[in-house]
Structure formats: structure tokens, C-alpha cells
Amino acid sequence: MTAEATGVRLECDGPVATVTLCRPDVLNAQTPAMWRAMSDFSRELPGDVRVVVVRGEGRAFSAGLDLAVAGASGPGSFAELTTLPEQECADKIAEYQGGFTWLHRPDVISIAAVRGHAIGAGFQLALACDLRVLAEDATFSMAEVTLGLVPDLAGTKRLVELVGYARALEICTTGRRMDAVEADRIGLATLVVPTTELDDAVRDLAAGLLAHNRDAVVEIKALLAGAAGRTHAEQQRAEREAQTRRLRDLAGRGE
Image (tube, rainbow, N blue to C red):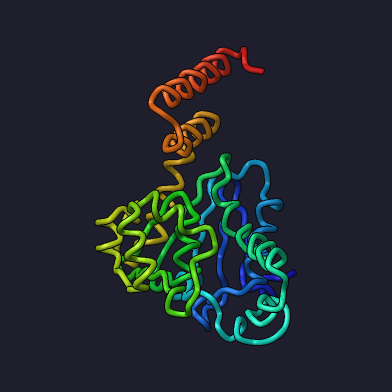
């Protein structure tokens, strides 16, 4: 389907792919069609892509769920989900989560370029990325609770990992908004820059990520991503094994 039909497009320029939410007239509010399209992007990425940038067209990253679509009847609506058996409803949500979780892939590093609103599903999309570069006008809110819902697009674990349980609980259960200064202070931001410098900052970060050996970067991401679930001894073993692979590869003795 076309970007006009789905509201999201994928563009590849060598090792950098850009996912752009392109519904600026509704502040890039998200729909199930967008989530399905984003899930498909994972299968469409060329093998040489190393960095994925996620951005919103216009003055906002994403204002969250498109309530006009969700409140309607038919495929993808809340009305449809409420009529499904419990397992089918959960399976449908799992399909939607796939539009976010592919950004965790071990072979790429994903960057959210956030300006303006990142609300609800928009916040969770930013959390799905490995790194977040924020414009000074960025605003986050986990607003699902205001609709009587829970965050269900794979954002809760990522939020706890970044800011801790107590802060994540407060953010999710109040639905309040936070600005870029607070987001930076509590660990959500990789970098905060003036709004006019956002695109340049993302390009510079991507260039830095591409400057070094791809296999080393992949090994480092795997080491850090798995660290929280390992003991010190297990992490040290993982380091030894990763370094052994790198040494053998650099010596031309890798498999």
C-alpha cells in the first residue's frame, strides 16, 4: 500500500533508513494501518541498513492514537476489538505491537527524532527506538490512562528500563505531560537540541554510529541489551565470548 493510504513511509539511503509518519494534518495520529505498515518495513529493509531513523512530518512526532479511527466501527476499531474472543483480541494487539518491536532488532540501531507532541502511541514509538534525540519543544505523555486504557504497544518495559519502576508508574498512571528538560533529566533523552537543529543532530548521530565496524556495533548492542537480565558473571562471560568472536573475525578466522 502507498504512504498516502497507510500514513507512513519508508525511505532508504544506503545504510540509513527513515520511517516517516506522514499525517501532519492530524499531528501524525496513529492507526492500525500504520502499525501494520511499520511491521512490514522490517521485512523490506535492505541488508545494508544499519541505522533506522523514525520521525514525524510537520510540527509533531505523533499525537498518539487517532481517536476518530479508533472510535469508528469496522476493522481496527475499539468496537471490533471488544467483539473478539479474548485470545483473538490479544493476537490482534500482538500484531499491532509488531509495528514497534522490530525497532529493537539486534542488527540495527534505531533513533527517534522527536519534535512537538509524542503522546500515547507516539511516546511508545519513541520508546521503541534505541536512542531519542529531542527538540526543545518535545512533549511526552503516556495518555492511555485518560481513556481508561493501558499502554500496550511494547512501551512499558522500555520505560521502566529507562526511568525505573516508581517514575514509570507515576508517568503512566497520571498521564501528565513532561517537557524535554524533564525528559532529559530522568533519562529519556539521548540528546536535546534546539528545534531548528534536530535534523542535523540526528544526521550527526547516525554518522557516528556508522563510523565503526558493523559487527562490533552489533555485538556491543547485544551485550548492553542483555546486561540487565544477566548476573555479573554471566555478563563477563558474554563479554569474553563476544570478544573472542571479534578477534577471530578480525584475524580472518571467523566462521
